[in-house]
Length: 366
Image (cartoon, rainbow, N blue to C red; front, side):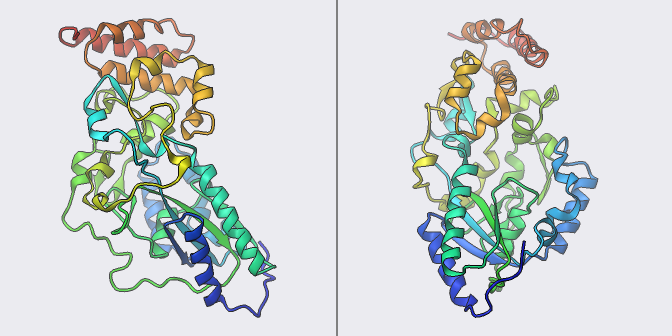
């Protein structure tokens, strides 16, 4: 990243314009932070040393570039951090879906279009607005797509605080939002933390810790990803640990329990973005229906979706576990038997586990 930017620029005025442009582009909040993350870096190193990242090797392979933005993108002076709400307004009540073992629960962020594409496009639009104002301008856009400590940067930019579940929380919006970043060489004024800003407002509440199905939040602000259902269903590519499978219930892609239990989400606003609207009835769909999809159907249904990234094999693996946890039903057992001889050893293993669990369950329900 070059540093040959114009000298005659009122950066305070430019910062105000950037925030106004960001809001006009659909971001609910825009803030500006510097690149210094020494405390976060120490915490990251300790977390990695404890092995809490599991098989997410990318968390470690970039070294300290994750916590040193100017080393990741040379010339970076500031990070413009943004927040965009994603909760779909018409989604089936999550607790109702979770309580019905024959239905599939998919994390609410993944019911619509892939957020990576939506946020990147909007951030690129924001960058073009800046370029029209400042001709010599270098930047890189990120949204959960590179070694970036987005929660820490958003906290520094006064967009919220880190909750005990490790997600960013806002008093105005809870946690149902995506984060994105624009690394830039512009020396913009940063949003200084005021008294109370960036400080956690969780108090003595431990709802997220108590509700976690697998007890992945091992201490306040400390997540063992190896136990997290989001990790198990999305990041883990191989066999799901047998001892954790019964705890997953019907969660086949991600897990929202810690957010559902958080009192701050009483203040969260629904998304107004058409791209995040529910597709294919995924907020309340039967497990057996999803398990019957062939690979072509999977690819067609999830084109342009975050779910597409895990692939068909992993998708069936997750559903097999949920079917094993479902109430004992003839329909569910028939669905599992249909894939006993699946070509994938990974799918066969999880199907056989599910059938064994169904066999040991109580009487078949009507």
